Image (tube, rainbow, N blue to C red; front, side, top):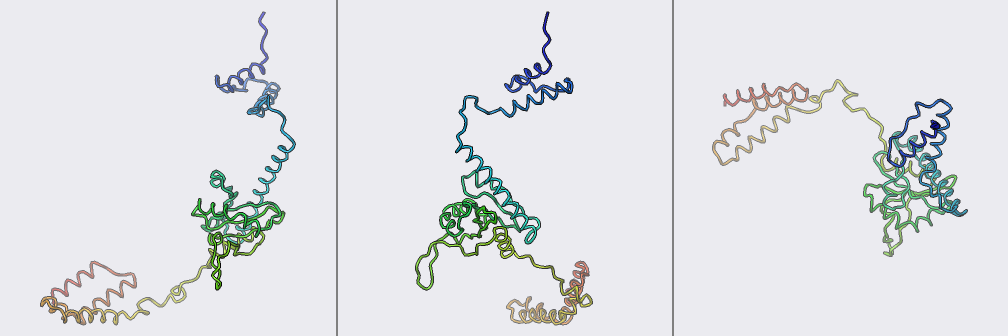
Length: 301
């Protein structure tokens, strides 16, 4: 007599085949609610155990503490990014965003975050908790220079710690090079040129200083709608002056045809130009009509 196999055991056998790549992922639709709950729990345990080495020794206390510290730092960096994004959206750019600097980390560089605000890119270098920013900056100059070199589109770097109230300073490209002191002419090492502030405020101040938002203004024409461009510009004077200049050039011409045609220009041509200019300023210029008038003048001449 053949013993019937339990449906859950049968499903697990099929799931093992699926994990080994020799079968399709089995469906749980045919199981009862109790069987389905048992199968889901077992499958969850299998998924959680994937990638674990059963022969590996237990991690040391130091390794566990290092992992916990890394998770804590990751949470702190994420919180810092969220606080900076909130500050920027409130005071500088409602569309500002902060993201993890995947490109820099993939390249082995020190930038943890990248800030996008008003077309600017600010990368974030995190130093040790409680570190003095000026001291940490001096030790981080090569890392900051490497970030600027690898990402030419970076406008600045925020050097910040992860204190409960994080402090930081914005660093420009000019801040990572040796400067010549005046009037002594002696070379001075790189130094921070901007103040150390609460890190979100340091970013907001830099963005508003570098890319200020100008308030919209009303054009003069909107306040004096009754005054047209033709009223402001002396159209007749401009047209007459242009014709006189051409006529004077014709009088000095060496070719007889040019001397005769240009020197004869006068009031009719100036009137035609003035009318055309006035219509153009009013938005009523008709090129076809203007060409016809010019041809009529040519025929008269």
